[in-house]
Length: 373
Image 1 (tube, helix red, strand yellow):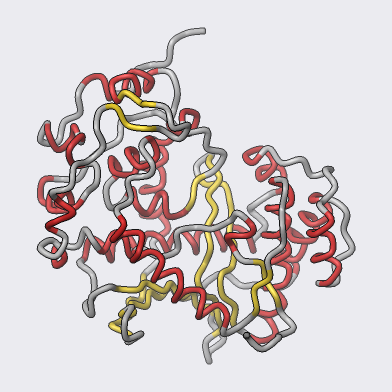
Image 2 (cartoon, rainbow, N blue to C red):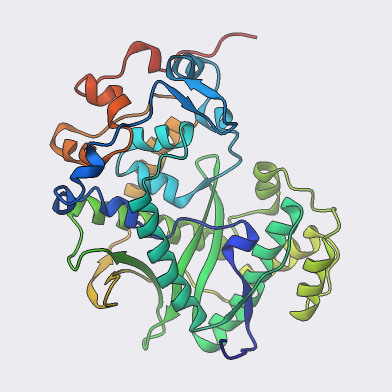
């Protein structure tokens, strides 16, 4: 059992705020792994009558016809997106779209890789603090846990200079983005550095296409974190997107956890006020350095690191392009011809119209103007 420490945070799983902070499942799409994944390539993909989130058959043609009525945000009932949703769009946007509409096709091999990566992340997190599980029964309780974690982590970062699994959230191009930063620490020069851990199944660095996705992911984390500490994220925006009820009393288990941390609160609104004050008044700086660390899963050997140059204009341009899909302003796009190798291990290759049509979607998949009410 881990030694007891003063700082305790609630696991992301318990709080309902998990973000896919690792990218091992995309490693299966790396060109070096193509031969090893040959059996997966030959597996049959989803049929035209696949099961949706409610376990009822979904006809792909009906799904396509629905594009002229609802945006993806509306159709998938999404209140917000994860940073990794946009990062995976950088890999293949159409795969992201199929994944939202037809969940449950993650191959066992890929699930195993994700589990291994999650275990490594957990081990690193436990080096700094213990995890406790707090039962939650409402979305207000779940967000309260996120806020309590933030309130505990900010003074720890300022006093000890090192934290892991820091929740971030903010409105970007009209959509709420949430995520979890792997690690924040101060360097010897006093600079705030973000470190994103990426585990690798094979002892080699990823292809440039994977690195590109990872660089975009950490850039988004900085973009959101900086907005949080600069007071650009507001409670009103958060409530608008999440439909939270700030006046709703918190559950007893959450209240006990808050009291243990020294916070006398009764509702989510009380915690929100504390969090936003803490973010703007604690002298937290913006992130100075973005670093990605690639580690071999089996040996824990560091394979290499990448220092990412933050280009705000480029990040904003990409976000605007990706959000246009989620808001229903354009159809999803597949990969370019030179990156068609990514399709070799895609679970949706058998039904992908972009692939079948050599980079063109059928007219039924293209969103049309919404019908007048």
